[in-house]
Image (tube, rainbow, N blue to C red; front, side, top):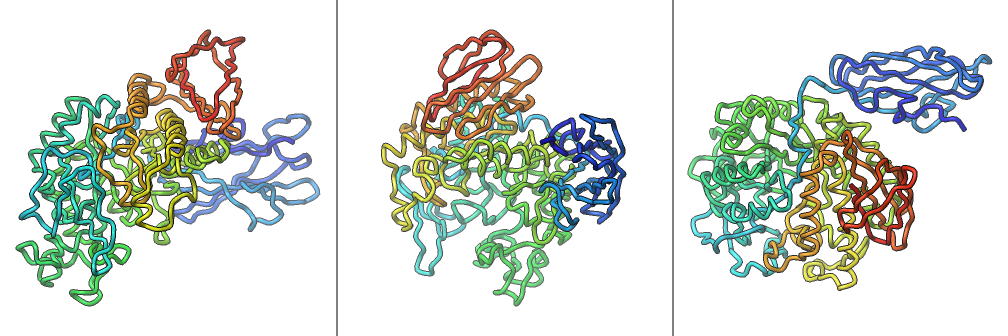
Length: 622
């Protein structure tokens, strides 16, 4: 049966995927026999515009009329939803959408056409390299700190390797006040190690003063948390990282502050009057009080996280637009990028202002957003968001990649992974697709090794049992084999591969806080660590892995294969997530192929490679 329309095939639509403003778009249909007229139907999301473009004859194929239409994308960023109406000589009308031919227009599921501001450039460096996420309290300490005089009622673990607190206190709250004392000097001490992994960007979870070990409840944006070090420690770390070719990304938590902060000051910790003490406080307009001072808007209703009003002029000036704003001053101190926590909860205008300030302060700085879904069409708080239309974030955390990769590694079909990623590739502007932060795990998800080793539904129901759980040798073996495959997928795919600290060393653990253990210095899984280091070196050496085109070679059942191509250079990833041996034949226009993971060489016959891939194994061919 002839395909009527395929938005991903250049025979049916050009150019592929998202387009810059003003670009010409051409669609071509091969309708059912007898249908020789129709129209392209276009709906504009943001202007709420609607228009039709006549489908005109563009030749014949096998005796059937081919129809085509062209139109110019709007001059402003937009989301266009499009479908088709077809008519035959008998007056019969059908509608065509992503869900196929429909008898009624109301049944249509439209295709998406992203139109973005192509004049706004995206820094080239981020998507090329490996990102390493550090939870600062748990990566490396140079000494056991004394918490005396530090904000909050902190305790410090004397033993680096012991478990963290996780049970609620007498008030039923998990306060995250137990610290291990990881610090910036410890990260500086391990910069050579990070470089050996091929790391190009360090992404820090929050480092500003806060009374919790996760530091997402900011106490003072202007100060490094004293347990981590000083501003000079941060500046020195950035200088040494830059000397090694490593950039630094900071976590911007701008949707809320801590209740124990210089701005809110519910505990009276800070000297000046916060919004909680006085309506005359300069910070009072930042917060929304229902009944001052005890009832106020808070993030997800958590009283220790009072939400801020991101449209308040003084807050915008303090965080973004002032000469010494938080965004600007830490870029001047050495940071190269900001990651926006809970970007869904930040207004589009607020994010756009951050990008503008960053470009003015440091033109090659990078802005990343935390979004868990397809960011090109995300609706948050009843509003369609504009993260990727060229004027807000440069890229997003690619949680859809994680979802699809986990499903594949845990037994789902490779075709589902390909479909999920093709949807993202088609919807995202090319700069955003290649600047996505691809990931298998973060501080907000269970450890990837545990997910793959224990499997879906394998977690104990009891929280204490999850805290104490350690994988069996069989689970760990399975998890390690699948993680090796997942790492190849992560490093070979377009975007910046992000490694959550310790995943390369074999750390395990269920949900927060069990995924936030201390790095096991001296007890690493060296085989796994070497695997990640090899992939990191390849990523830094192979331009095809940094910016190469993506070409799918095979995606069916447990077997997934794709190539990255940049001119004459080509790398192919061959993955078998199933338990049984699989055979695959792929095009290869060179005499030999070398699997850099095993060192094996394979000879091509008539420009094709025939390979037998063992169960739960992978190849990376160069």
